[in-house]
Length: 83
Image 1 (cartoon, rainbow, N blue to C red):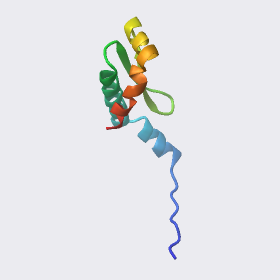
Image 2 (image 1 turned 45 degrees about the horizontal axis):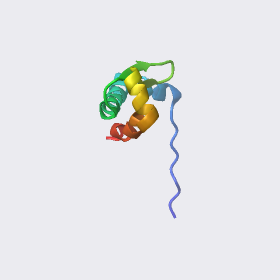
Image 3 (image 1 turned 180 degrees about the vertical axis):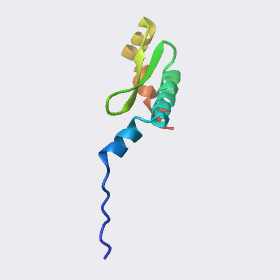
Image 4 (image 1 turned 60 degrees about the vertical axis):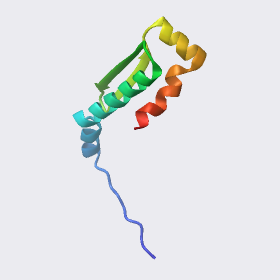
């Protein structure tokens, strides 16, 4: 019977990875695809925080807020970021 291996993650290395420009670019690409699938009026932002890179898509116009409130346009577009 095989003994499961042990993986030890180094905090410094993980922090560097999560804050890297490659991760930021991937998150921004995913957020842009979600915004495109959700329709017009969505705003994308991406930044590197203290511990990790992050991105978000928000409703920037009243039409976009109305589309999210009535037909969940942004919520339904989340799967576009999984590609």
